[in-house]
Amino acid sequence: MKNWVKKLAIGVALPGMLILGGCGATKTGGSEKGGIQERTIKAGIGLNEDHPEGQGLKKFKELVEKKSGGKMKVQNFYSATLGDDQKMTEALQGGLQEVTIPSTSPLVGMIKEYGIFDFPFVFNTEQEAYSVLDGKVGQELLKKLPEHKLVGLGYWENGFRNLTNSKHPVKTAEDFKGLKIRTMQNEVHLDAFKKLGANPSPMAFSEVFTALEGKTVDGQENPLATIKSSKYDEVQPYLSMTKHVYTPFVFLVSKQFWDKLSKEEQKIMRDSAQEAGKYQRDLNRKENEKALEDLKKAGMKVNEVSDAEKEKMKEIVKPVTDKYAKKFGQDLVDEMMSEVEKARKK
Ligand code: KDG
Image (tube, rainbow, N blue to C red; front, side):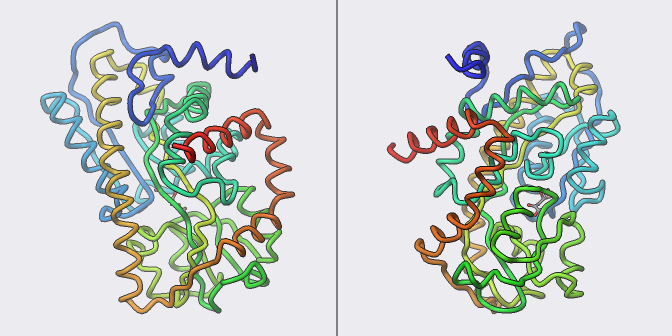
């Protein structure tokens, strides 16, 4: 039996992994002192308060404060006020902040295996992504976090990414040629867009609007809910429904903070992250549908991309995914693809 499956078999037996997974937490400490203490939890994200991720964070605050009888207080910080995904993740590792929920893509420098979620055109539906995130593969990756001074309580949803730009509609693989595209700080995205003939530049999320407005880049790619909540329609006339990558959010807690919590407090954090996560996913799917209509009304010129052209794009970037599959672990990639196949047959 493959070594990582053996390790996992042990992991799966652990209780409490209903929806959204969330494990590895049980293995990480927790103070013997029981009960619920007065605590302040600083929780920061890069997206706006009105984005489904911001709404999810509000739900998390509400649940923690209710379940702890008001003793555990959550302070929410939106719109990258505490810094971008990487900066906030480092703040958790240093014990300077308690919670952040970044995309997995900017974390690949720390946990390379998370790069499997940056492979283009793996998932067709959110349900397929959930089956992998809440299944063996997603759990396996959460268990890698404590060695990086982090604890993972599960996966929220950023979603399927689509391209916007100021030059022309992107209908074919050819249309990427020469486009200056902002990407997340992620090597797979950079290499994939280079392979398509685009000119990608990695950038923190909080710098994107200014870069588009100032035309230092021609385009960017994000889920529809983000394109709407970040008002990219004001600086980007074209929206192409490439749906090229599904990006998860991972709910992170500072291990220093986590290990100080009693089992009761850890349960409140985990249950609240999971309940708010389910709420956030439902909201995100609905908002992505609504955002498309709103962006069309706002005047964006929207074009579909045919499955045939998506297949061509997938073929063109295949050397990139093959290269990184070796780096991230072919076993893990194969396991992800077989989970997707299973979910697709359901
Ligand atoms: O809060 C998450 C954002 O900071 C970021 O991850 C959004 O997808 C994103 C991007 O393009 O940076």
